[in-house]
Amino acid sequence: MTEDPDGLILRMLRDMRAEMATKGDISDLRSEISGLRADTRSDLHSLRADTASDIINIQADMKKMRQDLSDQIVGLRRAVMEYHTSVIGHGVIISELEARMRRVEQHLNLPSMDSN
Image 1 (tube, helix red, strand yellow):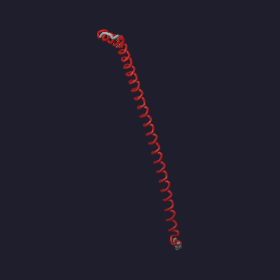
Image 2 (tube, rainbow, N blue to C red; image 1 turned 30 degrees about the vertical axis):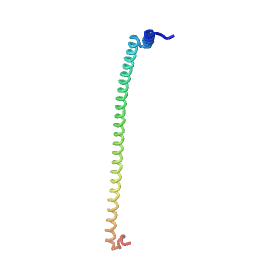
Image 3 (cartoon, rainbow, N blue to C red; image 1 turned 90 degrees about the vertical axis):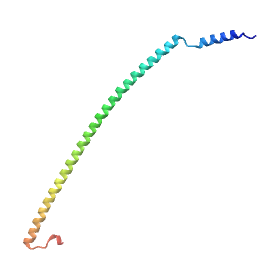
Image 4 (tube, rainbow, N blue to C red; image 1 turned 45 degrees about the horizontal axis):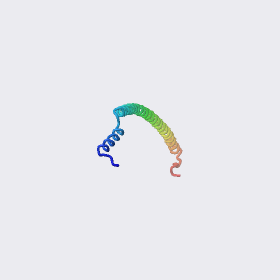
């Protein structure tokens, strides 16, 4: 048999009430959201601290790399200067030797070595 419309509405309202969240459920949900918010805030602070530490470490590594590179450049410059000094020194010795040879050739009236 059919239910009367008032009984049907009352049953539907009771079903809806049973499915609705209570104030306690809402309070629990709010406290859970609050806890998640606190956890997220804590994680964010930790992430910021880790990032700042990483940046400081990277800057220190870059400073060391720059210093190492600078030291290598100084060493290279020193090696080039020593090489040039040695080459120039040998050049002076060779040119002095050639000048002395020319004077000996002229003194002995010998033909120049350049003509050979």
